[in-house]
Each structure stands twice: as structure tokens, then as C-alpha cells.
Length: 569
Ligand code: GLY
Image (cartoon, rainbow, N blue to C red; front, side, top):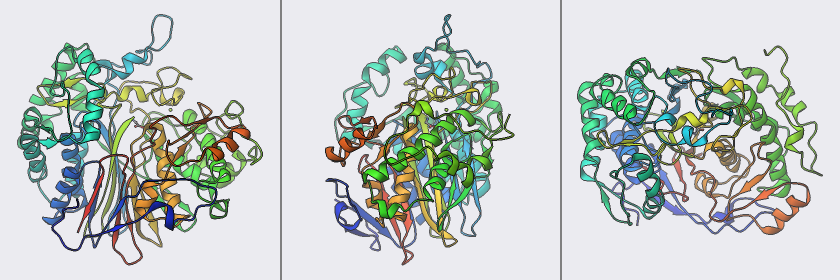
């Protein structure tokens, strides 16, 4: 089953329910393999992408080189979220302790307007912000890869793109999960593209899919550089294609797009230092608000996934997501009171109305008052190299296969990231998230995200790289994974596999994964006034992470909920 030729990779089978401390918790039947490596590791949504990234490390490249190779491989073999037509975020920590973040998030086209999705009655038409050409934000992924290469790369873009070009020509194997997903969207593909596309057929596990159009696009980018996509031949094909489908994006949008280096959100949680994504992602701030709120409580004593633990996290999440919806947006357009939102005293005040006796009602919670201050589908990968550099990167098309609009000439899907804006204050987006003025649409603005690529230090050294897809549930999945290791001594793989739950202020409900929570526990929460949601086959996130063990080896956590794979040496 596990075919790795390098001998220093050791696999240990760990049974989930045995080594972590659990009190009032539950059945969890999944048992995953843990991957341990001596010095370098890549964990991503696909085995092919992880192996391509790792080969770059073996060839002497660093984590940033491996990032470009892995991200481009995901664009080929994970069209669900891997992309050339989307965007993403990356957080890094170099081996000398320097930290930073790269924003290659999509932007609203220059012709976009605040009311572009409202009908004549002023009501939003969600179809327009979620499907087809008007849903597409200006893609940032290719610019992001060139920025990473320019600042940190040690190998040429041509060398980093070559394995993905070869993979697209050679073809990749469709997995059972991938076949199910592709088959589920057949009608949408046809309806939105008005024609059959490369993915228009019934897929079965083991099929091989070749994408020559994407190989050609990558080859042109490899030969002509960044401008090939942002205004050159490929860019022109893209704009003509979008125009034919009624889109508003122009060549000027592509020419003016830039990926941006930003200061990460950094805060302490007990003995850990957390480094996470700043706005235009809400991830770092909301994660920080929740963790800083929890700092005042003894989580170990409450017990993992116990009723009190679930109540406490829910109430902290409720209050943080209420702040998210009001305060957060693109920092190039709105002022965000970051320090106040992360202030321990402010967060303590926010919890004054909390009691273990009874649920708070979201109707009674608004954003907090801050003196002086005048809103599902994605993929994450983590990489640590043999030199001690670490990255956490999350990239997305937004929904599954984005807008479903597929350029057959270029070989990739386009995002539907425009739906991450608040199309009308108070109206939920596809993740049920509500936004306000701070996340209103404006020309050239970046839409608010929940993506939370995160690096954690312990005792001044790299400790964990972690992240996940999952729309609004990204932040709470990252949160629980960090707590599973730091508070409950789980291994990285156990922490990733453990069952998860989620609350986001509105709708006022706690969503539980289908597997892993006893009905007795859920009944007790209902009795205390919580609305409990547990649908069939519900999963929350597909977390991938890497943990530095006390013996300095690396442990991978690759989520069994997907086809995620950790490889290392
Ligand atoms: N498109 C999902 C997010 O950025 O949060």
C-alpha cells in the first residue's frame, strides 16, 4: 500500500481512540497511518502533488521551490480546488525565524460594482455571484507563484513547472472520491459551459485523465514568464473567453494584478506563538480571537470534545464570527482594528454573557464595540524542507470547480470568488457568512476570505504547519487541530483525524461531523439551548499538517476525509 523507496520514512499505525485523553467523547472509528520523516515533508490533497513537491526538495530545492511545484501539480490533478484560475494565501517561516505572508487572492474586476448582483427589487441573485462568468474574480495564483520564486526561489520556474506539464500530458489517475465528485457536477458543467468540456463524462476510479490544453498553457508560461498569463497570449484567450460568456474582466484587470507580501497576524497562545494569515483573510484574526479567549480556561480539565469543551469553543466562535462579519475586509480598502480585536481584555469582556448553564442566543450578540473605530472549496498543503524553512499555503477556486466555467483552450476552471464578498449587507453567502460594508464589492478590491494557513512556533522554533479547505469552517478546523495537539497530546495524524464541530454566529447552530459524536452528548447540548445539526456524510475540512516532534523528526497529518497524502525523507 505504501510504496516509498527512501528508507528513512517510517510508518506507524496509530489507533485514534487510544492515546488521546478523552472524557465525555465518542466513537471514532477511523484509523490512519502516520508518516514520519527525518528532515523534509510535503502534505497535500493528492499523492502526485506531494511527490512532485518532494522530488524538488530531493533535487536540492527549498520549501518555496517545492511550493510552486506542488501548487502547479494540484492545478493539474486536483481540478476541484487546485488552480490557475483562482487564488490563495501562503504563510512562511524561514530557518532564521523570519516570518511573512503572501496574498495572491483574487480581486474584483475594475468594472465590478457594489450592486452588481442585485435585481430590480434590490435582492441579490446568488446564481450570478456563484456560477458563470460574472462570478469570476481576477485570478492571482500564477502571480503568487512568480512572487514566491522571485523572493525565495533557488530553481528556475521552468524547472518547477516541468513536472506538472509532464503530469498533464501523461495523465493522472482518478480516485474513487474524485470520480464521485466529478460525476456529481456533470449537469452543472453542461449548463454553465453550454457545451461538453474535458470533464464531461462519467468517471470511474482508475480512469486516467490527460489535459493537453493545460500542459500547453503551462508550457507557454514556462517559456514567456508572468506576462504570458497577465496580458500575453494566454491572458488574451482568457479575456475573450470570459467576454463570450458575458464577463466583465478586461486585459487591464490582468495587467494590474499583483500578488502582495503582507505582515502575518502573530500572537501568543500559552507557550505557543501562532503566525497566521492577515486580511484580506479573516483566518488569522478570528483564530487569534478564539484562541486568546480560550487562554483563560483549563481545556485539559474540560476534556476533549466534552459538552463543556464544545460549549466553550462554540461561544468563543460565536463572538469572533460576529466581529468578523462587521470589521473585516480588504485592508487596502478598509481600516481594521487588529490590535483591539486581539486584545485580551476586550475578549474577556465579550465572554461576560457566557454561562455553561445555557446557550447564548446569536440574536443577542452583535460585533463588539471598539472605541475610536470609525464576511467550499479550497485546498491546503504544508511543506517543511531539509534546511528548516516551513510554509503553509491554502489555494482556492471558492466553490467546487469554482464558477464551473471551464476554458477548454486554456485547460482550467475559473473561480467564483466574487461570492466571498458581501453582495448585500446581512444576506448570507454560499457559506452562510454574513458581511457588512467592510466587505462590500468595489472595483479592484479583494474579497474577504476564511483561509487560515498557519505556522506555530514552540520555544522559539518551528513546531507546526497547518491549514485546510472548508469555507467558513476553515478557521474552526485549524483551531481544533492545534488544540488537539497542544492541549490533548494527540499526534499530528490523530489531531487531523479527530471529529470536528463548528459554529459561526449565524446561522445559530453547531454543525457536527457525522462520525464521532454520541447522540447522548448532542442531546445534552440541545437541552442547554444549542441547535445541533448533524447531517449524513458531513465532514468539516480536510486538514493537512506537519509537526516537529521532540526528537526533531517531522510527523505528517494527511486528512483521511480526502485523498490527502504525506511524503517525506
Ligand atoms: N473561498 C473561501 C475562502 O476564501 O474563505
